[in-house]
Image (tube, rainbow, N blue to C red):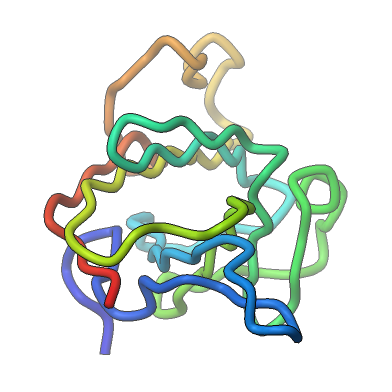
Length: 143
């Protein structure tokens, strides 16, 4: 069952390679748009953990069990992210995150054909709408 918040506590942990080395971390998010979105509508943004910025090109989105880079999302018009499904954001970070509490911010947006391009968020905007925005969840735990 999904949590009400966009950023989910469940699924927040480090990622490891075959040798057992931490190579990054993952955080799960849900869409807050009641209709869901086609993957080509997604405008992935940044992830910030404890003030450290991870830009879009260090993040892989896993939706319905398939990994997508931001460039792949942009052209994937035949796959859909339902509002009842979790997207797993896999973030590259050598060594992963330290054990303990972390403050996590995730930013993404979904375009809509009936909104003018000027209505879409730019990177300096911090607003949250039903089409996406900037979401923060404090005191997430890595064990």
